[in-house]
Length: 376
Image (tube, rainbow, N blue to C red; front, side, top):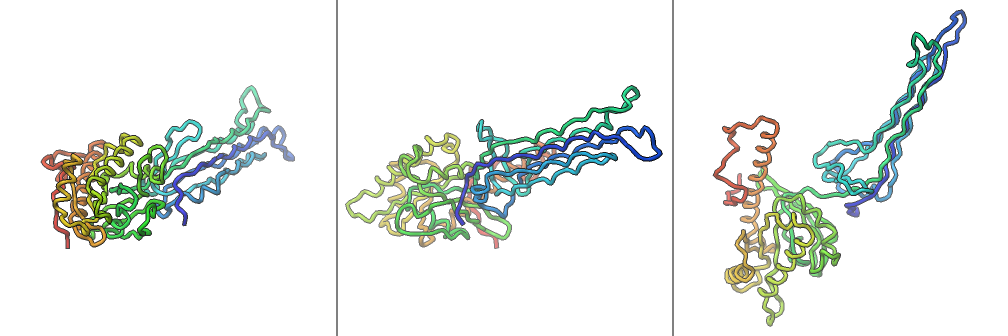
């Protein structure tokens, strides 16, 4: 299936049915009085997040979604039937914007979360509502109200804990296939990855996190060069960015470390130009393809010195798996710490948090990445 992460649609809710203007006329019942019923409500257009859907491709072709109008009221106090509502199923992680103003309307980040895209019009009132002591035969009735109409832009931002960042052929697809259940296309030419890939990394039966791999960035990405800029939005929800750097070289005359430092700086600059918030996310450095380097420790030390890096750094070989186990344990620790902070924040927001909560430990920060042994 082709991956589609953006679509523009039009939603039109149904018009409410008109109220009825009617009087009761039956044999032997003189002056029966008004009996016009109300019109039915027009159909409403809803959107619901469904974790079984992973693309917006359905809305690339079905752009207009029109709900039916409500039935008109009738005599004998008969009310019109309400129209059937329409529910649009979208992937979890879909953000809905007003296409005209660009305003963010909804962020569907949880499974089964439902929102109203366009409300159906209320049905009109029949003349039975206008009867009074001074108006025994009312001729008034009201028409149904028009339903809401909107032009919307749907944008899918995949939900992942960890995002992979790097140049084309840095080894991102190889890494995600090594540590997770994802099976992306892997080849020895640039731009192999054409759309985001998600993989679940399971460290035990009860502990796991999600990794996202997007097409590689190149210099000038913030201005539209390459493919990676089209999918950077998918990294905005991640907790940690893993910046993969290829420190290997097939040319004996090339200074691989100097080239890698230059590429790393270029990628980070493109990140800053694209989105300051994304640039400020926690970022870990991963030096890849060390299985073909003569002295991995010396390369790691020199790279960090020339790059000026003082944050978390890992030396791995995604192809052979060397160093990847320690990486995923440390990632799991950090993600668990972030989740605990989220749970505590939610408890404090709804008033259920207490200082004795065993999850609260002010001696441990979100950046604490002490390794743990894998659970059996």
